[in-house]
Length: 396
Image 1 (cartoon, rainbow, N blue to C red):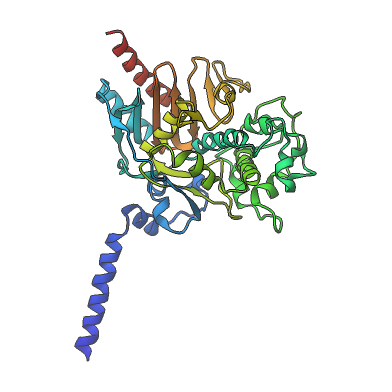
Image 2 (cartoon, one colour):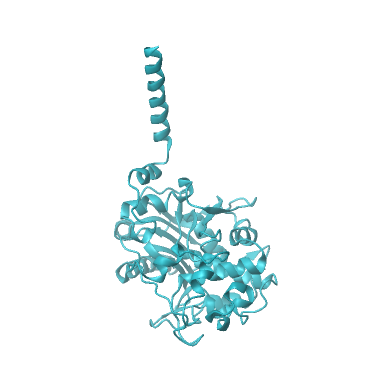
């Protein structure tokens, strides 16, 4: 009997050990090194390295799938881009880049990975998701769900009635010129951006609505730009209320199932079961690049754009002065005087779109800090290096 018991215990240990080593290495790391805070802004660098590429595998974070549909991937390799490999490696090291995909003239010219990420690995987008969310507003207008950019936020989100958002238009929400007070300081645990996803919502009210409707007015609506992730969350809820669909399902219907992505993506959910629309799409770097290419091509499906004809003329050009020469803000896109525009997020996520060069650059990273001018300037320099390499080809 004793031998039988010992044998069962030994077998259980072998099975448990096998199961442990079958778990994704990043998940194992997080099990052994659990963050002390639920807020990723205050995790260690190794914890973020592991988490940003394993959210879909953790199984504990609520999310909704973004289905890829039946369109087969058709992205092919082009001629490798001639680039200084040492300089590129230096950028990877300094910026802690996990994935870089460069598409030019519709073909992959450069692809490189680090930090354990591979081509089929997914990464968390952070505020790059804002540019996805704004595109859904354009689609909802084209589909007739939203009447006008001049409509008020509370026209579509009834629980916002009686708040300062009665005075805020859909367009002002898109350009972050609502005039509502907001603190986006990533280093401050008491800032709005740190607290709003952990707010206890009023009974029966979405958490974003519950938090945002209590905020005071700081400026007249439309008079000043102020970056606010909370307002992008409101945009996503507005789209959902207008369409009667989750933003994940609507994104799948209008975009993800149409552009030949390789994998389903996912979108993290807040405590009241709505997508965190200002953040948190999980997809591969290649598939992020495919989305950027789709936008660069005018968001067309079967030669017809999913957004109104005027949309990108407004969305990807400066609509709000952000106080930085050469830069501005469109509809959840960062805009530049050279005609390029960018979706970008904390910790170094980026999508640069360059019409002149028919170029898109997708980057996933884990900077040592959420945001800092030093790293933003380094990312801009990497973009310039890639653009310069293409320009040299054109003059040969």
